[in-house]
Amino acid sequence: MTTTAPAARRVPEAIHKRRWAILTVLLFSLLVVVLDNSILNVAMKTIATPAPTGIGATQSQLEWAINSYTLVFAGLLFTAGLLGDRLGRKKTLLFGMVVFGAGSLLCSMATSPAELIGYRAAMGFGGAFVLPATLAIIMNVFERDEQPKAIGIWSGAVGLAIAIGPIAGGLLLAHFWWGSVFLVNVPIVAAALVGMVWLVPDSRDPSPGKLDLLGVALSVVGLVALVYGIIKGGQVADFAVPQSWVPIVVGIAVLAGFVVYQLRSRNPVLDMGWFRNKQFSGAVVAIGLTFFALMGVTFFGVFYLQSVRGYSPLQAGLLLLPLAVAQLVVSPRARFAVDRFGVKATCVSGMLMIAAAFVGFLLLGRGTGIWVLEIVAFFQGAGMALVMPPATVTIMSSLPREKAGSGSAVNNTFRQVGGSLGVAILGALLSTTYRSGIQDKLGVLPAPLRTPAGESVEGTLGIVEKIGPRAAALVDPAKDAFVHAMHVTALAASGVALIGAVVALSFLPGKPPAESAAATSAETSAEPVATETAVEDTAG
Figure 1 (cartoon, rainbow, N blue to C red):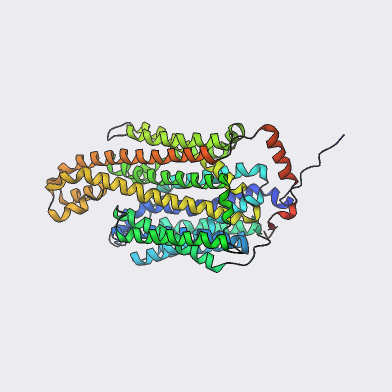
Figure 2: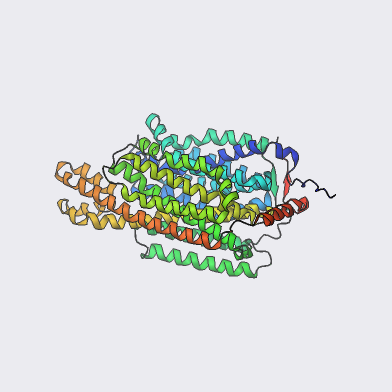
């Protein structure tokens, strides 16, 4: 009679015992980085107010306070993940948190828009080192069978942070000055740093090879140029202007050169062979498309609630909570759907739910019961929760554990670029549709005010408030034009989600036969520990 030897544990026993405490600490670092951007959106109006209430930032300066962070963050994500694999993920995580916390403190004390923009760029620099490290460390402190659950919790925390940001921002602004939305990060960062030093082990690639500096430079230049062009196109709602298409073309050309160079390099910073794995490529694209849709709906959802329905920032944040609650509840449980139906069926179902939720936005008008939005938001959050964890697990499990930092960086880079595209493209569609709907009603305004009034519903209502009763007749047409523009944009986002469903159906793995799954599990368990990434218990 043959007996099966117990599977060798890849993770040292001391680390395995505190894995859930490690995850809790990592979630704090994740929450503070993701939460920051959604909090900032609520504070924009206050920051634009002249001193002493705000710092008198113009619309363009406000946009760059957000975009300076995005530009640096997206440009360095891949490089930060690569450095984590080489130098140690705990080291890069601690470095990123310190820089992020220092940038937050400086932002809270900024006295001019230029200072705020520069300090926000510093926060983006720190954040780029935090996000890839959290997922890479999770892959190295959890055994294979628990990784889906841990990643589900990680994904749910991302959705929660995006949704509770406006609530936290509204509460802070109701009681404190605008800088409090940044200062609140500092004690959280300090507490997280203590937990990281005490609990989190270090891990790195034991054989990283020679660092290809040219490859790193090409990846940074290409990503920065691409994201910059996307941002500029979204700002002016026109991707045909040279300020937009030139950097986009340059970015694509440099990234294409990066791919060619990596294929020929002896020590590539990104193994292009990963993308030959259709499951890896399909999961990466699915995540990018999901965030394209998410950031787009967040963009127009806030304007609908505040500008059309008249809710305060805090109320608007509370009304979007079902989106977060659904992700928080469903994300950790998505693995059960994967176990029963497979990754493909789970992700396709999630994408179809997201597409249906966007169609549900067509039910929303100026007087629709707000419970309709609550149902639509919950449905959309549940759909996202069925896509993100299984797709992330597919990406990370496709790669050797010693490359977890680079794999996490690829995952986060596609997510960031997808989100930036969502805000820019769907925002441009929203602006263009709104402008065409309100243009013929602007004749009641003086000629110099017509262009700024036609840019957005906020612009129209702001000018109406400034001029007074003479322009009051514009309020109803402005709100009607925005609702129509929101419907058009929601349909476009639904189409993107349907493309994501097709990608998932075509490339993600189906449910393996029971015998095959058991064999694969046995083979994975039998892999020698020596092939794994070097994990050092440096905690304490």
